[in-house]
Length: 472
Image 1 (cartoon, rainbow, N blue to C red):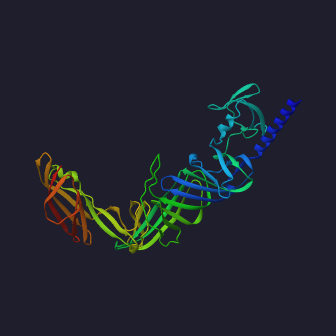
Image 2 (cartoon, rainbow, N blue to C red):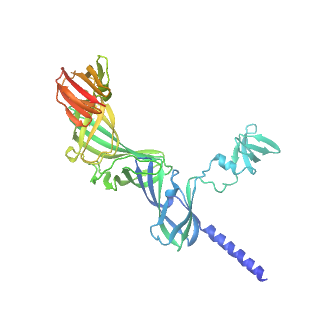
Image 3 (tube, rainbow, N blue to C red):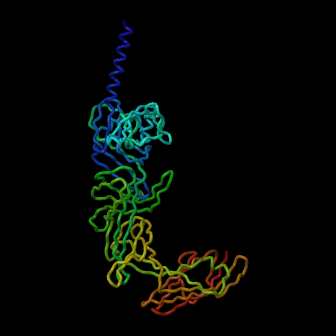
């Protein structure tokens, strides 16, 4: 009798425990969300902080934390209670990403009965038949009325949704809650497939001496989640990761972005820079969102013409024929407050525009700008000059020894423009070099570069000749 009583008590305890466990199986979706913060790196990576209000019963239970990014990195998840951190703790975490689709639903019903509804065109009605799904491997095989059907055109109707299939990626926690509380849970995790980049528009004045500049942030969210009324932060910096490296620059100032409604506030953060949007925004999945980053007018700029030489030409003999070299057109400006900038510029593409003779804005070129701290120079290539011709010819060459070469060069510059210009000829060198003679002065830029700055009046021609000895 005592044994029966013990068995009965044990069964009742198990029953009550199972009932309590069932009661402690809870779900939390985006409707519980009270705040969300999104920090995006310009390297296909984002940090999500999802804060939700969830009431948890006392004891152990299961919480299904739904509506997370489908490209979440599960090992980066960190959950805590903002209200009662000493009460709530996660004992076990599972990331369920076996998302339901038609094939997976049918897989759960192999060997079971399902309903198939077909349109009977002869009787103008819908007919329903009961079928046993024999296989769902490379097509469905059904048994209907002792006959085998290889596929069926009708609609398949399942009696219920199978267990362990979910519509969206879900974090499942076994938690321990020491007291029945209404928790504000903060869940942080990294996700991939969310990115941002900067794009700039620079409009030159007619004299090419000043420009208006505007910068835009393009945010691309393909992480598999929507972030409603999110606080948005953008990070520019060199964030090291084990698998890959996020390339970016290093900065060290704090400032408000140029007056464009002050959408972003910029601050130094560790060895990076962070741009904080001063309002909330909704970031939809599979959406590209553009936000104004900066705007400034009448920035002093300078247009430069530059020809880049080839160092290998200095150690070989070439036939006495002229060959034309392209003349790059560059725009330079100083990123400082005196130039009405003075803000860390994140890397991106700068596109150049200018009004034509009818006042219509025309695209004239683009170049990539690297991460640029305050007080640094910016030099960008727009294109190549049409009305400036530069030709080079080797006038003399001799090999003094197996490793010592001497050559002479004549460079002719023709200015077909209606204005005077200065063309810089940049000559890369190698080994031990010495300019033997030169018709014009030059500047030594570094250990292996010299530069000739040649003024050419409008409609005229200029030239420079020089001899150089190079030892390898």
